Image (cartoon, each protein chain N blue to C red):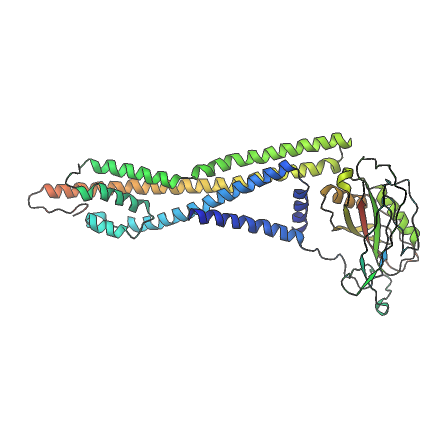
Length: 230
Length: 233
């Protein structure tokens, strides 16, 4: 391992300017994709934790104000944020709120939350697809240099060609090292995003159902007011 | 959180790269444990085989190796001092050993200067090199043998390095010679930092295998050699 590392360093030192630039670019890309990974890991893990607790709630049991207070404990959860927006736009203005406005509001806020969770995932996909090509570019350049060395020294011996090829292949290795984690992260977060999306749909359906039940009770003679379940 | 994530990512990358560099800079283990050390500094003008044995012998230029021009002054190096009381000959046992840090310093350089720069280039057209060898071992009074191995190794040393790049390059290859002349334990002891030059130095030693058998009168089975390749324009 030590000898390999040492040789890697000497190879890097004797690499051409363009090869060094490609490697630096790939390093920056890798830092970016790992940064996105860490950020999204934090966001999705908090959302998942909150979602599991919110899904245990029986929405029909609470009125709108109680539910808002309960969901205040999970400010990072998309479900909680959707409900807060809906609460402001629908439940707090019930006098003017149309019954059909609720599904529309839920759909719109849900889409906003999904878009928020999706932010920067596209960068991961781009990194995953572009990095190998950047590495390949460095490799092709290195191979060109190796061929030029053959011309310069008039020799096709391994001693002349191999270092250039080795230097060139580092770029491909670096490209793959940046791309593989980015692809894994992207697929992982895509799965997490689908789960959040499904949970939002479920939450919206539950809210609509609870609201329908409440309105039915309201239309019955002698019913009170309150929102959501009661 | 977003900003912290990128900072954390940068730190992770720096740590990984730092570890890589740290591994690379770690000193390697000495090839052998050295108990007896008789420093013999051999320095040659660039492109020529080095003088042998504390300046008692000066090697002649050889046609077999790429001559390199100009003056090269070997920097004074600190060589370990041998404690005569501890020097023991143990036939059949390995003599080569290295304890450079073990004793007070005694400068033992042999400086040679070539006042007539040569203009010939190595066959590859680039910066060839000179060489010198440093022996670890009990008194080795066979200058002809050292001269022969230097000529053979340098004749196999043809680095594909441009003259400009070859300037100031120096690499040291350590190897052991057994009594039949077979080379073993070849390793780069001190790298020049130029991949081609270092690799070619190692290959030159490997290509020279086998070397002539050790002198029969030499009382040990093995001889450790630190062969210094010096690039010159």
